[in-house]
Length: 148
Ligand code: ABT
Ligand code: MG
Image (cartoon, rainbow, N blue to C red; front, side, top):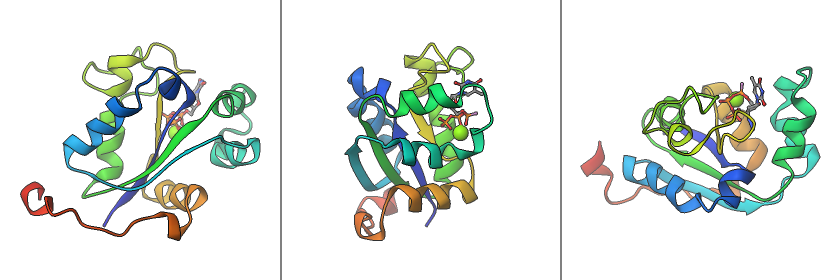
């Protein structure tokens, strides 16, 4: 079953949007299989955002992600990688549609509330970067036949 890595960023935690954000993925019908609140080290932040290493915003991005705790999650379900990106909305919250998380709650690209893996390869890499196998629950909720 497809899995993706989602992370509620420091602004989402500080603004008390953790419950609101988790609710959207639960209500959609996806399954939470990993969840932890954590303070991110600069080493982990730099690995996670390695693709942006040469970009001018890289240092401020690392500072931001390590500035305050995040909620790291793995969600499972059919098509969850692309669907989560839709639920999250465009990178710049000013361009994100109302109804998306960024469209409903965000204003700034540097404070865009939540991260979601952008494809199957990054999803695989990010799930294993952030979680050990022992931290992931293999389960199928009883509600699944009513969802798919
Ligand atoms: P992430 O889910 O955080 O990866 O965001 P998304 O995939 O929607 O967008 P990308 B392009 O991956 O941006 C990564 C983070 O870099 C920030 N950023 C991006 C800037 O601050 N300035 C920019 O010009 C761009 C392109 C936004 C993203 N996260 N934060 N925080
Ligand atoms: Mg990205």
